Image 1 (spheres, rainbow, N blue to C red):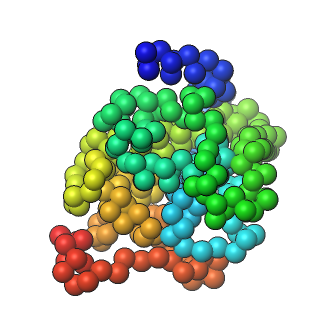
Image 2 (cartoon, helix red, strand yellow):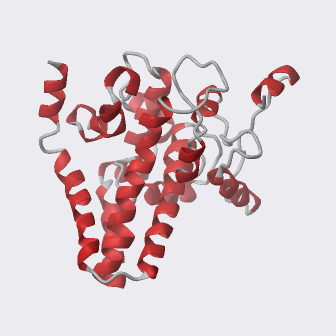
Length: 276
């Protein structure tokens, strides 16, 4: 009964999502140039950083501080990913950490299946809304409430700008292709990072570290590390655990844009365990 209920809930919510995926076929009807592929890579990386540094490490976990103007800019940039509103994203992620891989978790692959954890819950009407009590620290800002309500504005503005400046080829490669890749790169953390990889820490959930996922998500693949220390900005703990999001945030802290980056401070014995 539950699966039938969810399938019914997909009716209208899936249409824009499916249209974006189908639009990828447009790349076969435009002239290929390496610059369009470079544009796709650039917009993927910029927006993946906005998702990981913005939606996740800033708005969900407050692992560093920003001024109010920079906060708005990061929220706007994150919403160009097409992954709904900033308050919606952060509130649901906080809910995930509170109930990770328990019955109340809204996207546990072990309990609800990999499809539901990867994308089903996002396009389902069941989770169109968010609980504002989970995000009271940011819901107080009217500009963030406006962005959250009109989350289609940033992504539409980006797509329109790319099309007007670069034409159809730029649009299909730079915007459509990179958006679809961005979707599934981000969603893989909810699904694959709770199924495949290694576990450094014994956490109550099934989070795992995965080097490949860390590469494609700029550091989010160190998911077991993150579930152990969710408020810490750096998710890659050993030198070889690449975390490009943290590296960029560190540079921004040198420039004075980012402040008070939260780091891992443990007693000596615990610190030894953390890097074992």
